[in-house]
Length: 494
Image (cartoon, rainbow, N blue to C red):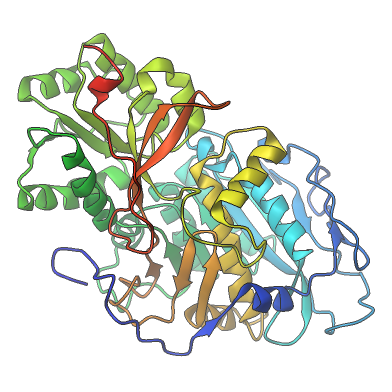
């Protein structure tokens, strides 16, 4: 890693003991045999394996919207008693615990998770052939962290101590991911997470040495360097005075941004206007907006919840504050948020962790990113959303399990994480075989994934707004889009 926080994408990756998987390899390891998928009962309901050649049924309930203080959600699993008439010897069920913000302020991140997990179980037929040569049924136990840090810690501990989980997964905001990972680290449970910027995950949990880090917990997502690199390529597409107004709340992500962003801005000739931290759930941004107006802010940047941004942006319009561009992380990821804003959403820019134009293909389903999106929209009748990439978390997990020699030995799972190079996920390559500090592995526990930039424009089809990709950030394997960022004034009059 370079001193300025950037990672040279052309640096050579030094593999230790790589084991890469193509689609053919993965399907061989998955041992696909067909299964019927059924959700909706109490905890422990099974996904029962069918005979060869049968087509899996679709997920039939809205179980992810349910919540209770005890079991919360049903278990999705394959039938451990099913006899295998041919192929590898049957192994014990492997249980995956998944902690997500199914309800609460961050619920938008999990709105596609039921569909994704159903697709994962259908594609794998509920089995993985692991490195022990046995065909193991896999089950997914889902728990709602209710978008609450204390709850995230609690349900993670329950999964580990009471549910017999073999691997913990989490896809949440920075504070929630950290709570999940900290519990897994404390209990010595293998844990794979995503979504939070990697600095929020790694440094935010107190780690300082990239080569030491943590023993049990591993993470994939972009970093601040990606947001900065993409922003400095996107913002100049609209002529501006280089005065940036920051929206950084008093939470894990906001604190991380406040620590790292100012140096990048100063180095690249931008003037920072930081009105100070605000608490999540703030209902009055008037003073911040007036501060931005007095300072001549033409670029609004930051990171905040969709709910908070909705309040800010409506109040900005009421105050006749229209910057040249507005790009705030987390808020414009979801089409529902954009739709709820109505006409004032047109022209909002956004970091894009994932987009159907990405040139990747799933080893499990064989689909391109665009085909994956097409399937989601056809299956659900809903507009695609960026958290569909959470499927890569399950693809990564499956390939780690395929590399695991002994699932009863937690250390064996960690060893599998460190020798797995998942080359074909819906979000590109997840490669923990790279030498620390090279390629896309900035620390022992992290692999970076792409981040690009986009803009919401009025739709030309059945959706009121569409997300146009405008820049490929600092990721050369993603084609440079033909569309460029447009100023907000092209969409709105002041």
